[in-house]
Length: 371
Image 1 (cartoon, rainbow, N blue to C red):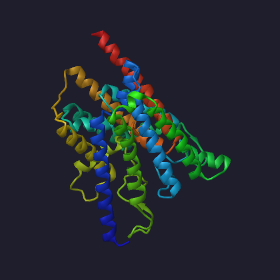
Image 2 (spheres, one colour):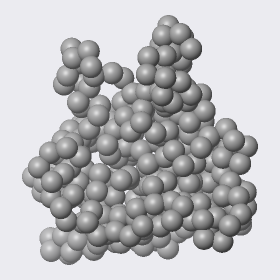
Image 3 (spheres, one colour):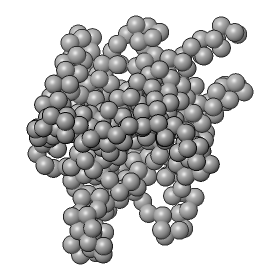
Image 4 (cartoon, rainbow, N blue to C red):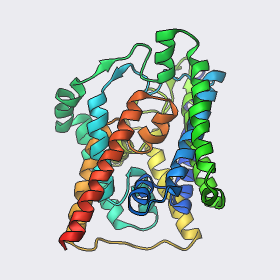
């Protein structure tokens, strides 16, 4: 591949990632797809409808990822979720911090970007604080604390953290075939569970959220892992995943990308700071939500209610920034992209997010009762 062809491919990858993330933002705003909202509906109203939307999205993403791996379109070992070192305490503690923070900040990272697109100045503040906390936890003073504490508690899983690869290393058999079978059983089960509810089936938005969000995750895996894979870089001759921050194939996630987006904006004149899938995905979600808000005429400027509201959102943003990096992903990064790979680490992180969210709801109830 010639250098000019490589640059053209990079442009195609970035535009495709932007388009996919814009579709994500559009669907999320239209259908009110929200992990925190789904948990809140279960806890406060006993309604599982939005949780079924989330479950269907995971199921569709899981089936799509495992099918592409089985077909040889992508390499499931080349994701950030694949390494066999299971940092379970980081996943659990980071997930709990993130879940707690998203309740205080009125939504997770993806919801924050969607709310920015609909006119929320509160969400804009959350974005800046969350991005700052995420960067400090990746490379700053909090990174030192993270690496010397929770990251030290781990165990190694032969074959990798993805359950199919681990089972293949332990019992034999082809990992991609095992992955496809597990994807069809687990992912298909989640889809059937969602569709088993008449209320879910009755709404087009429920179908759109479940199937649409899941297919966006699949599309992002294909864009990064297939379209953007170059066996030989024209300069280094090494295999490369084009326009990624991690050097591996990436799907949607939003904690670290917020930090990368801020870094790119701050150092825009630095030619070494290049656009990546992470940066354009942040912009894409905002643009997609903005278009949908204009279409349905729901764009409204929103500010903080009072000092307590401001403080809670700032604390929540800090918790999400620190927790999302520590857990290696958010409700989308670990909850959709990670679970689609059948990663054990992602399962632990999602459990932590749910536990943290339950703690956040308890705090909210206490604050309401207190007056």
